Amino acid sequence: MALGSATAGLAAMGMQAWAQNAVEIDVDAVTNTDHATDVLVVGGGMAGLFAAVKAHDAGAATMIVSKGRLGSSGLTPFGKGFFVFDPATETGSIDDFVATVSRSALGTNNAVYTRQLAEHSLARAAELRDWGFFDQTLANRPFMRPIEERGIPLLERVTITHLIKENGRIAGVAGFRLDAEETITIRAKSVILCTGAGGFKPNGFPLGDLTHDGTVMAYRIGAKVTGKEWNDGHMTRADHPAATYDSWGDMFERVPSTTGVEVHHDLGVDLNYRAYVLGNPVAGGPGSPPDAKVTEVAGGPVVPEEFQRRLDGPPGGDGPPPGAGEGGAPGGPPPGFSPGANVGGASAGMAIHKSEGLVPYDDRCASTIPGLYAAGDALGSHMAGGIYTQIGSSLAGSAVQGAIAGQAAAEFAAGVDAPVIPDARLAEITGEILAPLRREAGYGPAWVTQTLQGIMIPNFVLYIKKASMMTAALAYVEELRDHHAPMLRAANMHELRLAWETRNMILSAEMKLRASLFRTESRCSHYRLDYPEMDDENWRAWINIHRADDGTMELTKQPFGTWPEQG
Image (tube, rainbow, N blue to C red):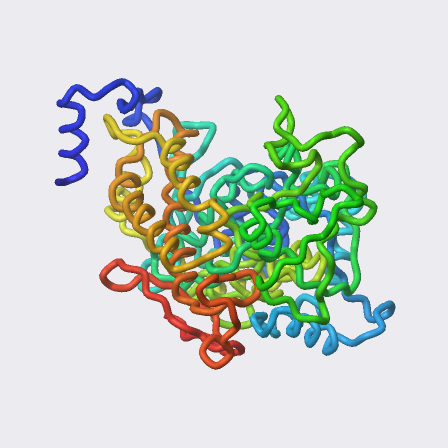
């Protein structure tokens, strides 16, 4: 049954009020604004800042469009450590650094991007220091300084829903404003995705506005995506899960600072495995009382001996206050959890920084689609591999890659003509953007998101994996993809954003499940109960995902240390 007739049929059957779409705006009165530029940067975080600055400085007309406020949305406000490799103070060489990261990453890192991080981090930190980034807690003012000095146009609170490809290369984007009844079209010779990572809107980590938008848009027009099997392992507090994403202190109150070489093998699935085996996520782990007995757990994720550490919480932690109890009291942590204890799942749906996103075609952040670039968490550069290695490398990597992508995109734009997008194609895209507002009845995005969270966030699906559970979860996700996503409704521009974010999360969930099923081994932050060992004979490779001609997801291996073909 066609979608329109299905919706009409539901309404004709006397649909209950909960299913009806009480649209609050006149959809026919929604206007469109058209823009054009050489280089378009999508995203206003650390990567987006440097991409725009360097593209402009390379001579390209440059514009930024962001779903939030420059420097104040996504994960940028929460990153307070910035890695700097300073040859004057480090005892080892860049070669030593790259080799150490590679050992911790169990071969999963792309050494070219690891080296770039070390080579360019000092220069990027110097620029940020000049702009005042290291002098205050919030990033908006320091970020605005170079943008205003250069007169770079900035569109904020705009949700981009479509990447547009014409004649085999990128041609622009389309989306809508959150604070006005208006769609937006931006024609561009090149586009840099600095859209960050994403998750399933979990509590306890600042991922609410990140839903893998850039990755999913690029996938839909044929770009290759990688790294979806890896899992971020950030924790949160059991007593106030939404207040802060870990127990290391309030990120808002800290001024950013630089860090030197300090390679770890951190934030994988160790805590999740302990929870699965012991039934108590905090038994002898972070947040436990100082005298708690550490329960030994056999098996679990492989941690190279060189990088093994005890799970005894952040430095200086002294456990819960005296008399805090076991949890379960009104307003306190759940039963079995001590106040202040760390629990996993805070960032559910996100992979390791820089390990997922668009597959890089070269060492300059180009994607497999000509004219389309990505940087930061939107680029699957595997800069640190499938595990967290270097402290502070996330912010630094975004700055370094943003600068490289900006220069490369400007050079590409200088060599091509302005794109031509047929009016009929633009009208089709506008219709797709506004479709949830025109739907007479359907599913609310909040309900579909909650359903998706129930499927994907459980520890025994997302973190401690086995084929039977992932296959079952995939069946649910396919149902959401095929039936519920096409029937998402929206009553206003804010709910329209939620509808598009929900669609993107559903597709990302499918990618994570299929990639995790495909990798029949355990390595770094990907752990399978049914394949608990590393398999170097068959799996010294990254997993790439692309949209096949029939619309299905096709997964392929890309051997470590190689580059894919473009196109």
